[in-house]
Image (cartoon, rainbow, N blue to C red; front, side):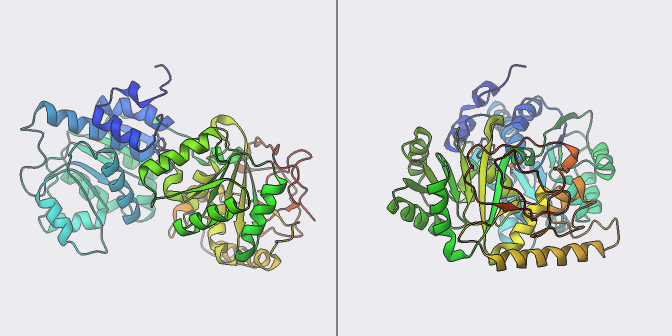
Length: 490
Ligand code: AMP
């Protein structure tokens, strides 16, 4: 099949294409390119892909399309459960957050199709969920516990399920949901289409997939972190009040032409954009409180070079697909470690290289630890600048040491307690992880050992960057790039 460069080539119905345009999705991601045609053709899918690859849309888009077309063609049989509690598509996912996110994706992509969907999860009252179910649904997104609970009470009937999606299967097993999943599978018809997604595919997950899927098509998408490997990322320990001055200094000294600066809050984005503009750096904020048309206008200005800096929150950042971003600045570290990969992936697009600067103050040390876990490496620290916070760096070292000690005192093979970071980072190379805290005084003495692969490094934009020193675990520090990245200090 020829390379798909636009959603138009996927024969999608107009209401879907419109919604994707509204989302500013210009082209399918690799997993969407691979999965959408197969799901539309009715195949089962075994997808090995992480969050961040566009996996949700990869199953949501063809599901919406199939349900929509089916309903148009045969309004009688395609109506969602005529009886209370019946559902046509069941998406099971391990956590409430993921369930909400997936529900939001179905809302966005299906907004013009009038398909009925709902999300159910535990920890909240069931009344509203039961009410939604009573109408019958085209799509139900659920966490296993609440789903079984409501089935037990007679509010959900899975006997009419046509499409079954199991999302984040490895995490599901890590969280001990295997029995629940097996119970659910027994309640859905054997004749169905099944889509199975997992970030990793260890034996127990592959076995589960085997029991669910029928002649599946396999899709494997490299983790998003490989994009992060192309980015030259650097870390600044600093105090919160100094972040702005540090940013201005970087703007003065680095060749920062097209830059996205990430803040945690919308308010923070507005304020920083104003402050940059008043320092003659043309910047505009973009976040969820801005109308769609304002966002689009701002993006246009950014793409055309009219403004050089976009100050953004995570919510909108993932849809930003602008070529030639030279730098990403994490003014605030993201609260979700995976967002780090998404954020820095805005630069280094299409195989080109880019630079990311991250600011970390004392309140963000835990977040940094999560990020390192997910990257399975440390980030080079630049400390030779007037805004360096030695105390933040020392605290981080202590924290890392403490965590690594508590990890190494845990029995081997204990997989419980794995958050997102632990899953994606841990399994890839947990062996040496945490063996040493690294940090100041510890020289990085080896190349990047992630997967044993050499990493493409670059640093064309950072010739004046302050000195760096490794904070990484021993053996996991990336090598300084030739003559450009400052040497790791002893
Ligand atoms: P997911 O892997 O499903 O968590 O998606 C990661 C992020 O990518 C989400 O914020 C989506 O909104 C965004 N996204 C998904 N597909 C596309 C696309 N084709 N173009 C741009 N952004 C996308």
